[in-house]
Image 1: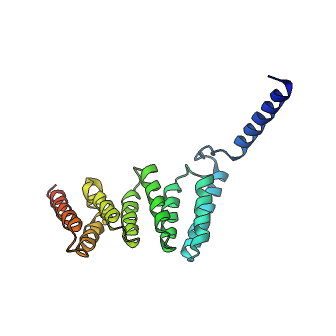
Image 2: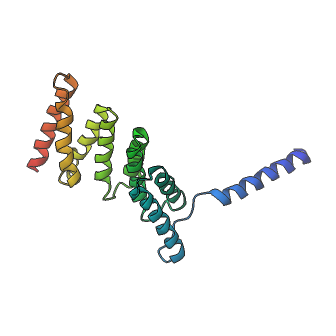
Image 3: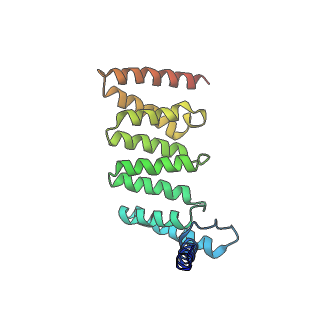
Length: 189
């Protein structure tokens, strides 16, 4: 390799290393790092305040800022939920569904998962994506740990209402039978 190419390659590597050091993923904040935890809590509270005030675009920006800088802090799953709620309020259905899906995927053991599944199903319905909504509601009805939660109970009511909208549809008739059978099975347990 020529000296010029070696110098260019070295310069590129140095640039890559310096960029990686500046903007890469943050290390998780340890519980004893008081200032960092305070900064994370403040950022989360700012996002929540904007959401409560109905400034949903700004709240989304703040929630995403929080998730970019503090992805492993205990508020992260709540920030993901807040993002989804705000996107829902702005009728950005697909983006809200994606936010809920990320929460479900990344925080499987979270207490917020049943709510996220319910909200995702409701968002599918608002977007008139009936089958996606019914399938999401069924996800709450199939899982024993979700079935008797507040969100599972709401899903039982909502899925039947949705399916009753389409009495002539073969798809809805088939899904309703499946849902009723699933509910009966879970109530016996």
